Length: 356
Image 1 (tube, rainbow, N blue to C red):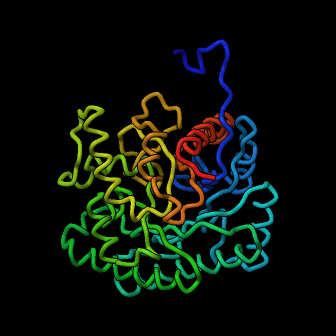
Image 2 (cartoon, rainbow, N blue to C red):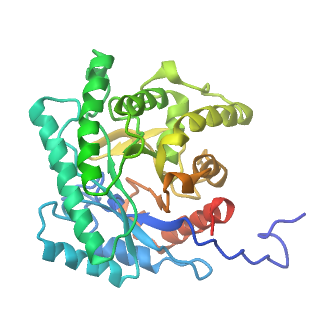
C-alpha cells in the first residue's frame, strides 16, 4: 500500500489530541553561543517569534520552556520585569512550562558535588528559580511544568575518584533542593546527560535518583538525544547496553531495558534526534549531539522511541513535551523550515502517544 507521501490521494492528518501540549525550548538560543563569534546568542524575543511563526496543518506550538539566565532572563529580575517577560510570551499566544534553573558555575549556582559554599550557590539558584516560577504562576502565563537541574559537575573524572561519596554528596544537594522546590509547590527534574557527573550513565542516574529518594518531588527528565548515548556507554562503558555495530533487534531490546528502569522516574520529556555522536560548542562540550528532526544520519525513530517514555505519562503528571535542539547553528535556528519540521514530528508523537 502506498504511503501518504506517494499516494495520489493524500490522507489528511488526524486531528491532534489535546495532550501533551507541544512546547519549544528557548535555550538553544543561548547554550553553546558566544558573543563575538559567528554563533552569538539569539534574543528571547527572536526565539519567541520563530516559535510562534511555526505552523503545520493549522497546529502551532502551545508554549515554551525557558532558561532562567542572561541574556533571556535575569535571575534577580524584579517582579515587574518578570511580569513583562510573561506578557511578552503570552502575547505570542504561548504558555510558559518548565524552567531551567541556573545551577552551573558561572551562572548563579555551582557544583552539587562540591563544598558547602558550592552547594549553597546551587541551592540559591533553585530558590531564585522558584521565585520566578511563582511570579509567572501568579501572572497566569504558567500553570504547569517543573524546574530542571543537573549535578553542575562537568565531566566524570573527579566523580570516579570516589563514586559512592560523590553520589551521596550530589544526592544530599538534590534532597535539599527538593525541599526548597516542594515548599514552593514545584518539582525538580534531573536531566540524564553524559557530561554531568553522577548522571553520566543510565545506571548511575538511577542510583542517584534512588539515593535522593524523593520520587514525589525529584524525578528524571528524559531527552531522546542524550538517553541514546546511555545505551552506547559513553563515559560509562561498563553500563553499555549495545555494541557499536548493533542491529535493530539489539537496539529495541536495550531501549526497553533502559526505559523500563528510568520511566517510573520520568516527569519531563524532550523530543530530539541524535546521530550517535557526542558534540558540543562554546563552553558546552562533549554532550549528546542534537540533530535536526529530519537529519538523514539521525539514528532514532523519534515517534517509536517517544512511546517508551510516554507510557503512563499522565500518572506522572506530564502535561507537555518539549523539543530540544541545543547547539544548532544560528543559520539553522533562523530558518522557518527548521521549526515546521520540528513541529511536524512533535505532532506525530502526540498523534501516536497522546491523550484527550
